[in-house]
Length: 339
Image (tube, rainbow, N blue to C red; front, side):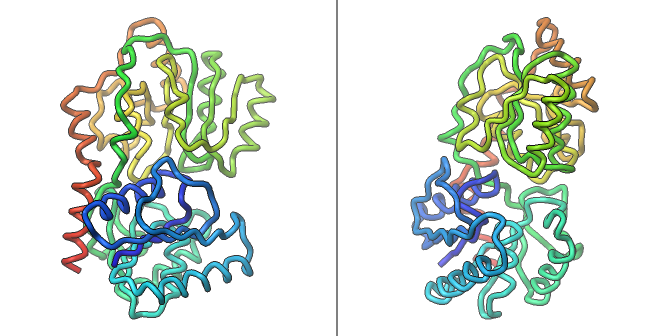
């Protein structure tokens, strides 16, 4: 039996990818279960297999976290899984505290996991290394943090292709709104640059997501007189993005870059920061921007009809196929068989 442990049922690309993988494994006839540690609403990708939410409150203290772990330990002991997949930081912490008889697989989603809790992360990774944890990377451009010599297979995140049907939006429609999708967090996601761009070209901006920078961004927008809407976390932000919107993806560094893949699947106009993590997608040079002024200049070109953000159908097909859930579920099954 395969047990997938995630932060929550929804919340970000890593959670949705694991929901998609769990459904694909279940569709193959694999016995699979999901445990979500934190409380939260259901995702756009609803789980078809058996799942449990431990309902740990966000920003929980020691008591709530200990209670969640005790429930987690009881569930794992009862189900006796053959493989436990640890998806992100908190699941790693819980997994490291399990008895050694359980076989663990760490999924590395980022080149800088554990955020500001590096010391805790170091201790957890040492424990997992001693336990000879199995590792999988979701992209090839980074290794396993604190385990530089660890061999880790690359298995990209699965995405629910049924939910990302291209809408055939006009290629040269006038840009009238900037959109940001993702966590409002620094330094990785760099959402503040969207305010700089919006101010430079006098254009409204909408943020879909939550995070530690939200209040600071709201205050900055108000002081600077920027038309900024903070829509919060929504299950499917893509349904609110129209043909005249431009998605800004300004990360300073990235893991898998799922927002890029989702935008391509949805045929949404977007621009990205010029970083190696995005260069691996081999997008046309017009997509890459080095500064707020660079982003602003490209958007003005869009407005004037002097720029088309086109990706070839062949490249789109290749990117989408690389995230096919059934193919990736098969790759995971082969990986489990080899460990």
